[in-house]
Amino acid sequence: MYTAHLEYVLRLADSALILGQRLSEWTGHAPVLEEELALANIALDLIGQSRLLLTHAGRLEAKGRDEDQLAFLRADHQYRNLTLVELPNGDFGRTVLRNFLFSVFQRPLWEALLSSRDTELAAIAEKSLKETRYHLRHNGEWVVRLGDGTEESHARMQSALDYLWPYTMEFFTEDAVDDEVAAAALGVAWPDLQPAWEAAVQRVLTEATLAIPGRTAFRSRGKLGGHSEHLGHLLAEMQHLQRAHPGAQW
Amino acid sequence: MERKEWPLWEVFIRSRNGLDHKHCGSVHAPDAGMALQSARDVYTRRQEGVSIWVVRADHIHASDPDAKPEMFDPADDKIYRHPTFYKLPDEVDHM
Image (cartoon, rainbow over all chains, first blue to last red; front, side):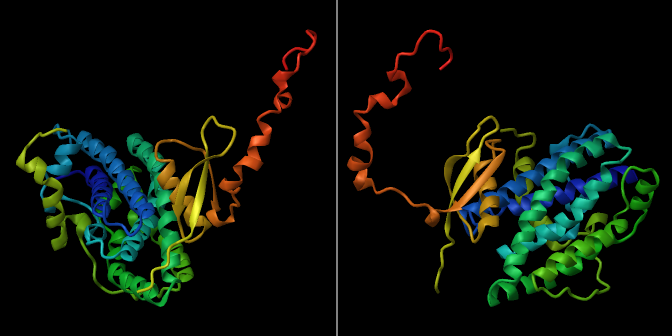
């Protein structure tokens, strides 16, 4: 049983790690060289964020686990990432749209964490906020261009939005971890970020001429450890080297 | 299927300590905003710059390489155009 503080940091760390891993799948496959580098840059930013956060989580846990052990030696149900980030990339449009939806969420989160009583977390937020602002800018520009682009690009973006949208509701589901962390002034409760997130998302999606899907009762549960079938496959690829050769370094 | 290439943009970067933007390469991008972002991602990954200019490659007018003799050779024998050609009086320092 993890403390609420540790759960909270793992949610941040694992969401960044898994999206970073997903984005790195584009390496060698992006539509143009320029975007190949952009996606790899974003992936590396996210993996960098997760390294700091996992190292911090290891210290909070106080069982001697470092970032590598937490990243490579946990099973899927021990991951606390949002389900959204483990979904397959799909096409380039869906990839940039997911990056956008996630970085719009990360931005107010880092801003709020600047004043966390956990000074390590506040320092990580300060470094990460600059990276997230760029991710938001770059991916937001693509969402507008592809959404308000050709007939085909618009149709693809709308279907990507219809696919991804239900998973964004998980960002804001209330639970005891959030309440406890917020009460201790260690972090912001995620439901409190919803108004800022919705306003920013609506602004860009409107400019992109995309229709925001209606709400449904569906709530994914990745941050509670209940994942889709996709995470296990992702972890198999990400972890196989450390599983096959424990402690291997290069 | 018709494939349209994005236009080419020439990229100029001013380095941390540099005064001038220097040409460092090019990117393909649909418009100026995306060209700036691509230039950032391609050419400033290792702290190379603090400012970026991009300009559409087809907006650059280049001199004709075949016209080199009449364009540049006539300067070869005009050494008096270099300040070092002139002897300055001792009182004039720091020229």
